Amino acid sequence: MATSLLQVRVDDSLKDEAAQVFENLGIDISTAVRMFLKRAVMENGIPFRMTLPKSPYNADRGYRAMVEIGEASEKNGLADMSLEEINAEIDASRRERQAVDS
Image (cartoon, rainbow, N blue to C red; front, side):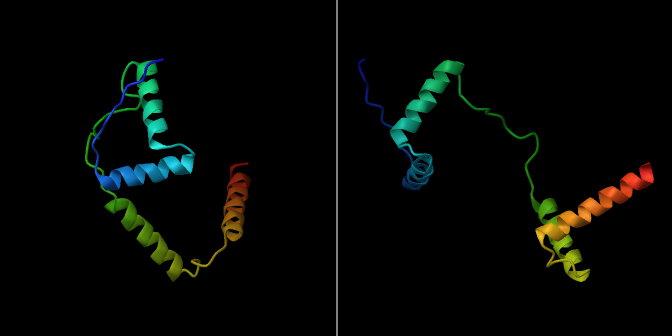
C-alpha cells in the first residue's frame, strides 16, 4: 500500500498536550491521526458531534451551590464526615422513607 505524507500546523502547546494524552493511551500522534482518519471514513464524516451549545455554559450557579453546600456542612458540623458515614446516613434515610411509605 502506498503512503502519503500529511503535514499539519498546530500550536506547540496543543501538540505537546495532545502527545501527552496519546502517550497515556499508549499511542503516538501519528497513530491517533490515522485512527481519526479511518473513523472519519467509516462514519463518512467527522467522527464526533460538532454542535454549538444552545446557550453559553456558565458554571457560576453550580460553583455557588457547591460553596453553599460546603458552608452549610461546616455550619452543621458535617464537613468531616467519611464516605462510610455519608452512605450510612443515606441508607438510614431510605429505610425511614420506606417505612413511612409502607
